[in-house]
Length: 292
Image 1 (cartoon, rainbow, N blue to C red):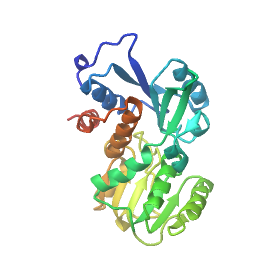
Image 2 (image 1 turned 180 degrees about the vertical axis):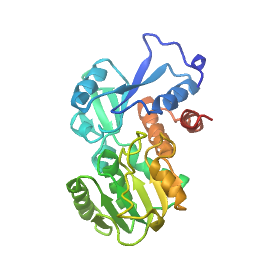
Image 3 (image 1 turned 90 degrees about the vertical axis):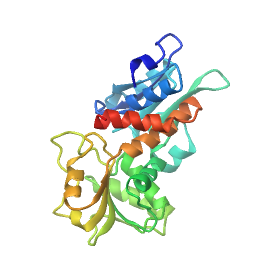
């Protein structure tokens, strides 16, 4: 979106930001600033590299400076649950915070409210980009951090038939499996690689963000020829090593652009109270990530 379409920054400009580590890959500023420009809003969206050790101070800092809201990405989504003043029903349900809204209470004090806009965005992207309905599907999910936890619980709520959780630290996957067994007893959940084939492999780890990252999937443990579709939450690079290997194996593939779009649109609506200009946001993302 051309800079000229944005209102000049002044003392009345409202600010939002995304905090993460790493953050240089983020396409969220392009998406949100295009949306603000399209609606003629005097708002700006920024991106900040924030070490997890300083996340609490960073949230308090932007709250003190009267920011309108925040997005949180790797590795902050679980940490932030204990760093906001209150949790929306979505954050309570999915146990992770990726969106924060700062609002003034009746006492004139600012409160940080944590939301989760990731969960619905994941399944919406699966349906749109892979034409895959999670109900009754067999899914292998890689990762048990903030994104992985949300994806696991959301997929279970959509009544997948079987869910296999794989994580570098197995105890984290065991913890999520325990929650699923309690909340969604009809879902068969297991920790470890499946013996037979699945309908979908989802990467919810950060492996693939850097060029020299190994693939998040150990193909000596599970072959990509045993799944029909692969979804990678990473969107930059647009084709990760995992997606390239999946495509070569004949799988349907999609990156995380659709999820980024839908979680961002919901966050935009939470902050501004206005319907998100979805087509404008999608176009800005595609231009930023694909260059066209």
